[in-house]
Image (cartoon, rainbow, N blue to C red; front, side, top):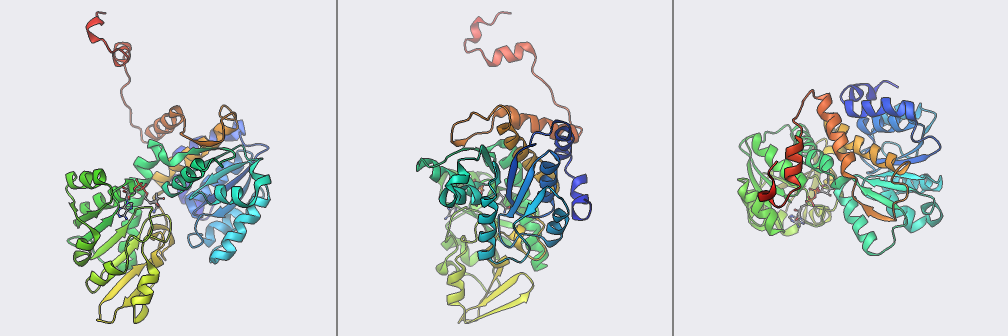
Length: 410
Ligand code: NAI
């Protein structure tokens, strides 16, 4: 398979190293792996690696509008891969595709946003009982899994890949930071330097967006609901205030909260003419688009990927990518850089591979990934970057495990 996957293959060396290992060991032989992820080139690479490792792979997209036709076409050529998604599907067709996929009884699930895990529990209980394990990639999915866990309904073990350092310190911070701003700048053809950028949410994603926006010369304002995150933003040098206070100052507002109705009618009401809204959170509920539709006297598309709401007082508020993930669903969106998806997808692969070996007896529920797997992917990444690090001496190792330093006379 070449085409759209060729370029990313060259830029995902960690996944490449795993592919070589898996080609020999065939860890997924006899398994049916469901993959629910944004169906762009990096995901295509993960899917071909899993298929070459012996699996039958069933594929759907984690967002109806992030599927890329060229990637679908490339994957369709593979006899072990079955697709239940196509580019340009509406939400109804997308959801039906996910149910059809589940009816094909996968026993391992790679999920993004907890779509398949939630649906298999709600609507396919017979299939759920045959699943040996799953891995969840994003914060929004972990939030849903925690709700399922507290309701005591999870029927199989799930590794929370999002919560590993190798995922959220890199993918959420750097991947979301770079790809959201890159897409915002290309979609609008406008400059961030000197502009006032308001970032709602100072979690891993918001931190990356705010830091990189400032790196480009923007004046950054952060809004938060958690006092510790607000303080962290303040100490990192961003201005911190309520969204009500920030809205009139904003040239750009970027949401990354994992929450709903963050930008509401009253905020849009206070924004200046030309303000630009974009969402980087997983679901399209962070900006209240219905409120914009209701308040506007006219809605136009001045540029591909930009919806403009003209208010009764003449102000125009611009919304990118219809309030969906700006880095994945806009007209120029490509998702995160390949180098960072290299480690995220390596984590997803090693997580589900663990269910075929030593994690096969884990109890149902949400589990952290074993630290050794996280470290192993970090080591592989450093190798590919040709970066070497120090290792602990025996004395250092012992020192770190000793509480009574006075007794350490060796
Ligand atoms: P996080 O939990 O680290 O951060 C979210 C932050 O938003 C928290 O600090 C929380 O206090 C804050 N928050 C919640 N409600 C708020 C409100 N009303 N106003 C202001 N702040 C509020 O989560 P993380 O990892 O930063 O993820 C955020 C979202 O981005 C999730 O939906 C996640 O799934 C998604 N995501 C998107 C990616 C992309 O490619 N665009 C990649 C990775 C994650």
